Length: 109
Length: 115
Image (cartoon, rainbow over all chains, first blue to last red; front, side, top):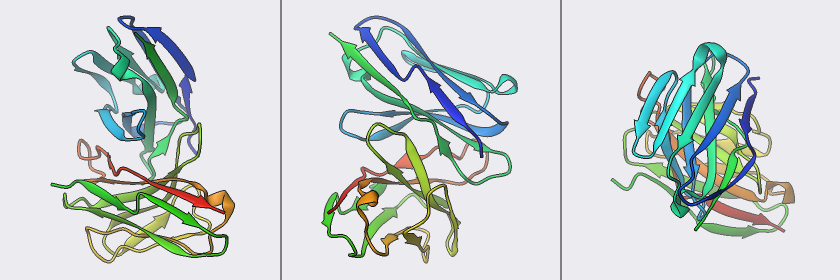
């Protein structure tokens, strides 16, 4: 099956810093989504981005489908950005949405 | 809209017991799925459904059954609970699998402890 790798596994930032999270996948996909899991466990969809670039406030994401990776940018980080960030992908020939193992982010005040 | 709801929030079972985790959505979504999340790990797909009456296996289906008799409900049954099934279970739904309609919405999760 498709492999989804996220890096780095852990990240500690000072409030106000910027960061880039990466998601690599092993096969062509027609669905890629980024999620944030807050410290209380709730999963929130951030972006649906199978290709191209999107921005939402301090967050932006870019997917280069031909090179099989996606990047999530967090600018001017806040303590509320802490949690785990997951990417998830679905191949053309499958109904299954497969998750990476996540990047755990801690933003310190 | 209530979105995706899950019950119960917490459950303790003894080995060998069976139970059903409930999931419901009121958004008329076609696609529904169940995931489990173990400590420090990502989400693994258990079962999914692309519409009422249609279900299929995900990555880790053993020990679980599902059915989809209505668009709104997608219960997950544990047939004979084992300690290895201790986990947090998430239900998710999306409008469809068509482009730009695949945004997944998650329920709050059910924490299950099997003793």
